[in-house]
Figure (spheres, helix red, strand yellow):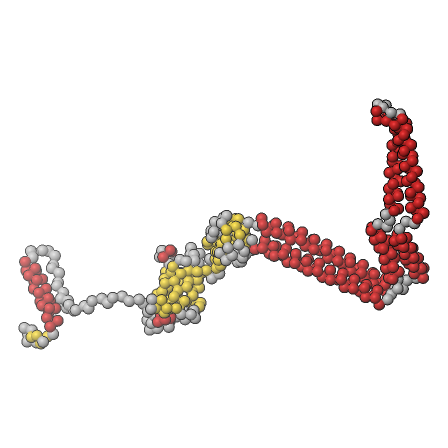
Length: 432
């Protein structure tokens, strides 16, 4: 405690203020006394009591307060409510872009395509394979029809005339097989030998006449009748020798096989005219085998068709199209580069439906509600602000740098302002 000149106790911190007031009054009075006379009246001095002012506090981030007149501020980024990074479903070399950044597209418009040379070749090969497999099915079905016809024929008794004709054919085949198996008779050999001897005698006679005319030493022997006679006799002898050898060497293996096949065919025809259990089983087995052939051929068709369908599907996937109306905001690889499935090629966004996503800390989150209005301060728009409304509060909190936050999504009120995905915005929530 201090004692002032008036005998009152005052606190130490008020003494400087009082002294300052007294000094100020004294200085003002002195200045007025020394000032020269003037037509203008001197201003009246007003005493102001000085008070101690505490230092300004350090500003802290604004936290939502239900009792406050203003809301919290957070920073977020613009996103499109309908945005997609579109990629190919198959690998390939990027052939061309049908759009460029900034273009507006409609749903179904082509965006980019891959080189389809190999796919087109695969489709051509697949079509040929399907056609070949289908031809095999047609052949197998014809075999089934033939087998069914044989079964029906086997089940139907033959007429007496057909049975008699079949029996006669069997007898003739048996006689032929017996004759071929026995070989030539003695008379056949004697006749062939006699013909060979006659041909030999004629050849000797023609040779003698040719030699008598000078033979090969006669330069004109080729024009003489003896030369022609020798040639004819030689040909006749060779033919007789061949006939003799043929008769002597019968039967050959081929002759026996031919006669046996003829006999077997005749017996088969005869047996088929009688509907026995064995014949019916054989005919039925033929149908079963032919049907198995059809199933196998059809499996080949299915396999070839599946390969063709896959090639056509790949050809369709070689072009990506816009899934919705929007604007092209980003393109990826360069034309000619090899791209893998899942690599973003074109990023499409609907700029007419924009949102802002901001991470709100858990303390501020207590004052945020779905439907709450907010003001957006966008650096890219200068002093222009936008309005928005909270549409979703995330259900998954994350912690980073010791701060736990939840994503909050705000729908931007329809506007013609140039805002794009990725731009930042300061969100000023209205107080609840």
